[in-house]
Length: 410
Figure (cartoon, rainbow, N blue to C red):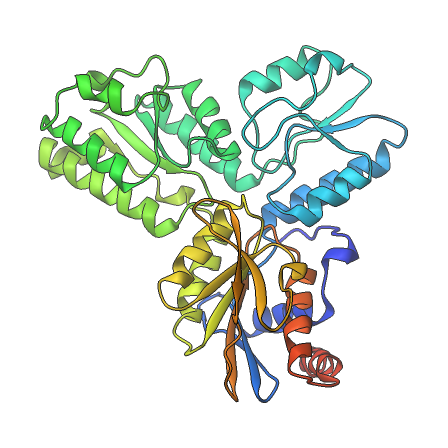
């Protein structure tokens, strides 16, 4: 796999050594058991897979090279590079400007952009409409394109099945940058609809079977479908793709549900004519991180800590999985751990922060599950391990752990 140049400020000696050793031991990625960091009375259990994915490293690599290659020029990002505060803040400090916020609201007027400026497409990709506006300024919009290859894979697969006459259903959050981008690309080729969740899917199923009249479609899915989408026609033949950071199990459940409805309506022998197979569009990194958390949750523990940006969809889903088993804290920075008694966590549903007290168990031996989202630097994970360990007055543990794991690599 291609190697990327990621700033050392995002790397951790300890985490890098652990990841490298686990990779050597499990080249086929079949072992989802966690990694134990045993500090005696305090034990951390790290998920098998966590942190920067291929798409994020690709985006960071391109963005930082773009900055180096264009000194003296104005550099703009269409929106946040990724959903991580440390990375985005660092880019801002280096003089990069964001044209839009995460909801697509304009922060800087496009009227101020000139052909002499540099514009970077973020990892989520962007809409064809925004691309066209930038290109009209005389800017080569593809020159600094950091769109995740797995997002582009979804676009390409959508285009392929669109050519065969299928409409597209996207499992994604309607306001998310990636979903907006995928919707734009898909809708340029075929009628397209966004399904937020299983609730939307069940409602759509009732429309397909005739349990609800077609008139309910426009009312229920307002703002979620392309202007050319005719439910009487375009729900007869479709494929399901997803926002790559959604829960893979949710996308599969949605696809299976609609597949069953189509099978019952048209018969198994005619399934392929009405329902496209799009399983190959699920992102490997999303699958790996989620499967690793499921494996992690088999370990008895007191609490879980998930690190990632508040707006990070893939991080939120890791929190969602952990909360089903044990108390879980969602933080985007080590400074959110105030003391042994106080932590500022984020509600993954509302994105609002709240303060919790006595979050660390008052007991002789404590077990903590650790993971992070695909846009979270390993240095954040390392810092959290450091800080919590300091509360237990464990001396010299870090150098010993690094030495242990780097020795194992020799």
